[in-house]
Figure 1 (cartoon, rainbow, N blue to C red):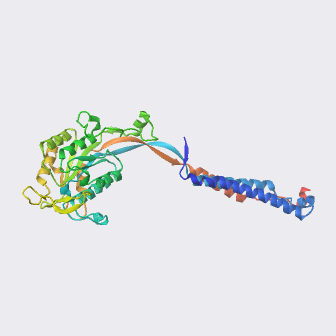
Figure 2: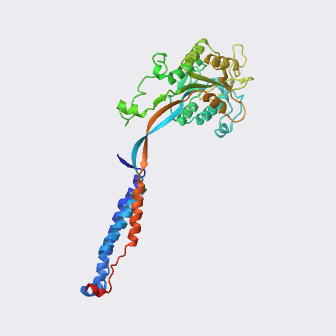
Figure 3: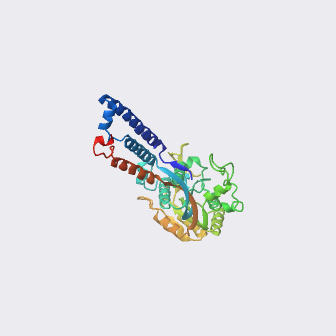
Length: 392
């Protein structure tokens, strides 16, 4: 097994400490010899200092040097790499946030987090906060974030919830084709959740082009090594779609996509954002910020967007469970508990995965270093002699 160090820069303590102690011992020996010669004739002085033991001084210096070297080596945190099997339970989850212009309506309250970020009150702001709060409650699940309007932008399934949350915040109404195409969202979602049926589901428009699956620089090209790093399913992971939207017409194509998701065992949960009273939809500037200009209908009246409970319930009815339509509170702080409870009814799979881990092995070296320093103190620098003349 290869040995690595958590803080390799501290290895200089091991080598530097050893060299420093031995240099001090050499200087001490030379200096003592010089002082001894200044005391008088060497044979006489030898009788006087007969109990002094240069050999013991050398042993003590070696023990001190090795003790300091071992402690410095320990401070560098030597480690050996290993592998461990862990069991993973969780869902494969698509979290889709509607980023159409109607989601910028301000008929909802601003949360404390939105105020801290200087984000104005809007349906989109609350949907993002609720989605991220949901991710925080699902630590064992893999998440594929989707932001949609007239089209759907997606990110692959990932265990990094911070990346998924950032993706939901990075894209807005100015970045996606205007409109509201729920059929495209459900298509993208089921293709992300069932890549094993990629060819059968007609997902060619979703992705799998370019070099997205190629190994990164420094990664192994050995397919067996890649396979070993992937979880091995014992029980297939549950799959679900959670969509945050203010509503849309359930077109026949969207209903067909929901029915397909149901046939594949994918749970569909819709979260309604906004209020039944609704608010005026405004135009946006190139940066995606709301302008004072209201969006107009053909007769010149302002476009009013309301939370469309009826059509959203029709979609979850087609998905097979009418109880999976959840209305998000438009006031107060966001609460993901009802969504978490709905996801609790979806069976979570079980998988095993080999993970790399490092084991600290500094303890024996640290113990040996302290032992050498303790033993060094216990060794005297003089030998036992009844009288100095005993060596004559």
